[in-house]
Image (cartoon, rainbow, N blue to C red; front, side, top):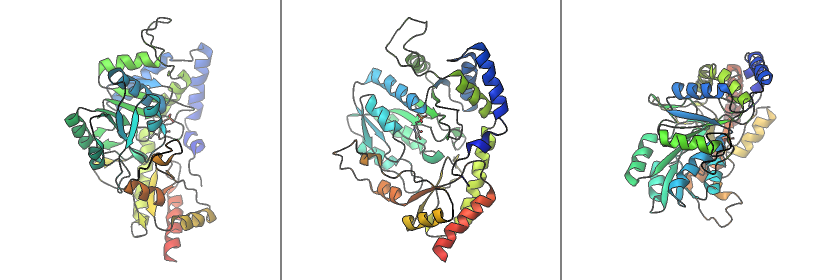
Amino acid sequence: MKFVDLKSQDKKIKKNILNKINNILSKNDYINGKINNKVENKFSQKYKLGYSALVSSGTDALYLALRLLKKKYKKGEIITTPFTFFSPSETILNAGFKPVYADINLSDYNISVKSIESKINKNTICILPVHIFGYPCDMNKIMKLAKKHNLFVIEDCAQALGAKIKNKFVGTFGDINAFSFYPTKNLGAYGDAGLVSTKNKKYFNYLKLLKNHGSKVPYEHLIVGENSRCDTFQAVVLNEKLKTIDILNKKRNLLAKNYYKLLRNNNNVVLPKYDKNNKSIYHQFTILVKNRDKLLTHLSRNKIPYMIYYKKPLYKQKFFKKNKIRLKNTETVVSKCISLPIHPSLKNSDVQRICKTINKFYFQ
Ligand SMILES: Cc1ncc(COP(=O)(O)O)c(C=O)c1O
């Protein structure tokens, strides 16, 4: 059993992808190729994103969004979550802003709206929520709060392509929205790739300039931009994988259902929030457990792979030397969380074995 299994997942589509890549090789159409625009339109239509631009990574998608914000504000505070990958905080810092951490909910591990509200002050310019592990943040409340205080919102959808709040996809609430196609994401490229989207045409035009050296016409530079373009190879891979993403997300959901069923009677385990109005894509299946260290040893002994996402809150990273922040729920979650395998090639019998092993640990 593997924690992630990209090889089996791609078995059926690999040949097709290789043929298409060969075609690109024969045309030498390597960067921002003809197909890129087609793929951008597909994403926009399928996920109701408005305008979208493929970029070189999810990190770049966030950074471009923040550079756009830089047009309006030289400095300012951005409220975000300490329980995620470093990228959102890193790009906030790289853009010259200050990340301010709000606490998370114990139930879904997402940023708490109440905590966001308590952090808003005259220096706040933006809220940057992350739909962690594929479960949507409470975007309706976040947008209401943002409107009340005139704040910009950047949605980090890196782990949640296809997740929904009622019938609305994530990535359709914020002013600008960022997606990652890092290979282990639910829709993964064969390398780094990402997408930035917005419903605002003006923002979009600026993002397009930013991602391509500030240039519309070769060698004419209207602004100082970046090189954040997406390779044509990656666009080809994404185009093929888009055809299978709904099936893969469905598979993740079925596996999650099995986890809920088989672990629900174990009161040593807290399962991730389930709400029929919020459709998670289960990028991870993350539980909170008692006696984590001993359970981890037990899982390893039984050859069950797991990951700890995330081992510490971002405010405890060495970089923030003098940071004295302590956020109660975040501290609880990092001390108890375990992510169990949930990739689409996992079998139901694997989930059964995992749950049996966990239940045996507590009830033997
Ligand atoms: C929540 C989150 N935001 C941003 C990123 C950055 O994406 P990328 O690796 O494509 O730069 C990642 C992941 O890798 C992520 O998990």
